[in-house]
Image (tube, rainbow, N blue to C red; front, top):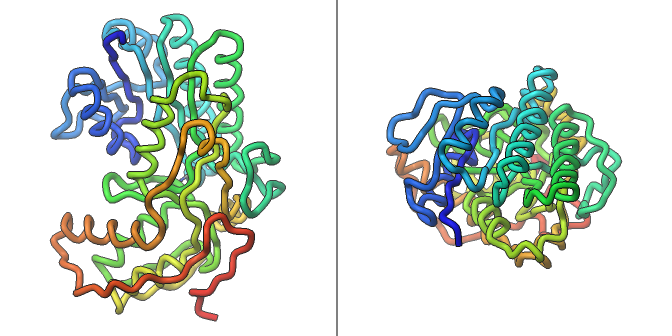
Length: 342
Ligand code: AKB
């Protein structure tokens, strides 16, 4: 196999922060080039400060560094996108087009690009939303992701660019925090629970959404990228699922570990975005084509998040009991908010 040189855009973001160590473990530090618009964060080696919107610079870096694969992670998420329509469209679509063009012209081996459950809309099935369900997104982020999926498919079909993609659910991680997403509450809640003992959620208590713990998301990304080419039957983007829950389910689970934790609800404009998305996703194709299996459910993820963050923040957890909580089964046909106030 040809020696790989992997370039990551948006390296300082939520996915990049955890994907880079995983890629470096596989390919070696020197073979993974981290790039982002930000000044180099301390402690990260082999880093280039790069604005992905500057295509000539991007092209030069790819050429000079002998890049063979790109993970193009730079993006603007759903909530921030609604407040910055032009910037969201440019960043999410134009930068992808530059990357695909460079990949084609320079004969790169592979490209990874993240899509999202935001490609679905109010006319998609609410439960077990399948791969080929109607996609009529109602956010600029969702529209840009759906357009991007078609561009990936186009470059594969017309030019044979081996671009692969996943429709991530809301991602939860103890590393870098997300910014500007609708599902971000599921990360913020852990920080506030540990630091303040309470959280005000911007979604209604029973708003059930598809979610995934970052270790599963990283593994899914690597497994997709390592799958033999002939196994990849979806060239837009694969549905990907692990768990679904609402804020009240997560709060109830946190309370099992931090009994005094309190939550209240003040929905804002993000509620409408969340309402337009499916509550659960069916990912048959990912399981069939490259053997996808999630490892973390709500119970395991919550415990792991609290353990990691409590170590990071030097805020020890109280003694724990082994009990687990009931929460929606996966796959789910309906959502009953059993952990809500009512
Ligand atoms: C967001 O909330 O915008 C993202 C996503 C679901 O893609 N986390």
